[in-house]
Image: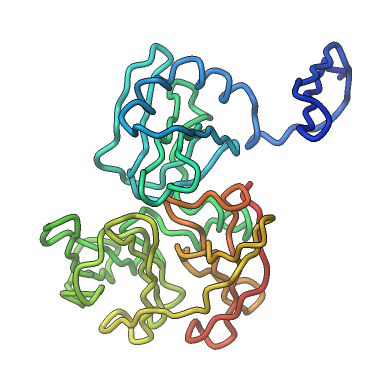
Length: 307
């Protein structure tokens, strides 16, 4: 089917004007993650003046990459309906995913938290989708956790993180296991994260010995992964080399600091390391790491674009 199109052209080195060409036609498949309509409808309702007024800066920016995954941290996230009514999330049960329009102060993204607006109303615009990036890469949902804090290895065997205490932005958990399909649960580790870490952000087991827990730091800007090879009796923090990436300006950064849950493919463990709530590098892309020793050591493979 032939559809009408438009083309926007702007080159600051040639002119100070923007050229808009209308009434073109094309036949193509669209990337549903890069829709323009959410940008237009969001900009119409977000209170730009009120947002930037409290920062008292001279320069501001607006960025839109399409649909983005913000993980489990609510920092800077502002949900709005199409009448401009705001609702800042306080508790989430799965990753925050939406067509986000961010207002920010260039160069001060870490000092001044950007305002990240998601317009609600369209089910496909702001639905939660736990472990989306792993699912898209792997193409097999059976190895993705059943929920964010519970994983069913089989019909009989499952693992669950239970909250036992909260303080100063961090949460303490215990790890339970069932061997009878959830009829009974037994605590197998009273402190699987080895202290306060922020909040749990996923759990998976590849077998009854090898498993991983993911947590978000209290800031939400980075995450940490823990590994067990004794069925959850003990856990150790997973280490991996931070991959340095070059910006167009020549500056070097280490954007990949929020590890995802590992998953197995063709006998190799894969892990997508995202950017956390402060990540704006290259459309919020991820770094793909692989392990050939059951997750003890990891090697960077390549950058994976956000879909």
